[in-house]
Image 1 (tube, rainbow, N blue to C red):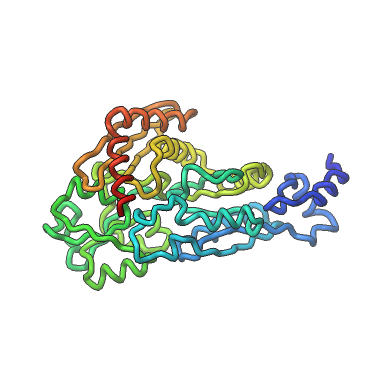
Image 2 (image 1 turned 120 degrees about the vertical axis):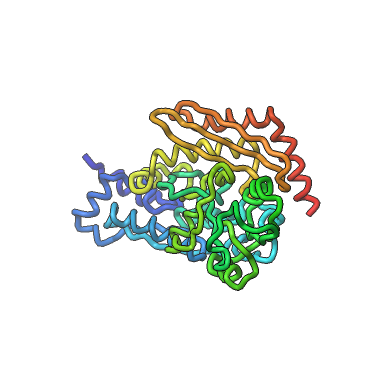
Length: 354
């Protein structure tokens, strides 16, 4: 039975970032049937301002609203450092929280209650007091080839020598340089529409983009080819959304898990993030992965490559699905033994020199 004295005490002690921090599911039901239900609980969702970020955030809002119709969900937008610096390659900015720091400050300053991220942009080491609460069902995590009209009859394997390929990812760059050293690679920044406009104007022969992002923006028709994993392993967490909030906010985390969590994606991505974390790599380092679930087994392939594509270490491990982070750490250790650390040290030194 609900203890109303505890309810009142909870209301009086609400000082955390999320208004419903101390409100149980029983209390939510009580709100729906009592005279005080007119006082609607509000939860504030943080998002970047980009078109893709907003599409992803409003999807989360819709899922939560369907599950909890008596709670009001508001979207609050912020611009991040990565959104503002568009004339410098991401890897040269040198900040692992390019697309998350401002949102994290918003949570710590009680301006928003949780933030929705593209999981591939969320660092594996989060600020004290914040945690990765939920991981959504993953869209296709593969990279995609988008071509200029004149190459519509080509695949990545048949593009001509000297073709100008646009990418802002060192991971894609390193893997593609290994397989296609005869291409010219050129950095490309800006939102998706800006990048596609540059492609269509003839500035590039092709772009390499995330298939998931194109799909969420309703642009799957621009995917000319899904890049095979044998050519390019995807980024850690690519295709999934990560929701970050105060790590001690158990009630909010429970609510988010009920509406958003997808256990198979969660397990795959926890293994991937452990792999990246143990290699101490950031979002912009040439580290790629692929994970697959078969029954109660998780198989994971990882790669670390030099930026020029001439050096690379790649291996695969299989283990229990019940311990995904242990498997990710095991793969990181295996690649370190094979020379991954030396490759990463060279990359970090190059980036520091600018």
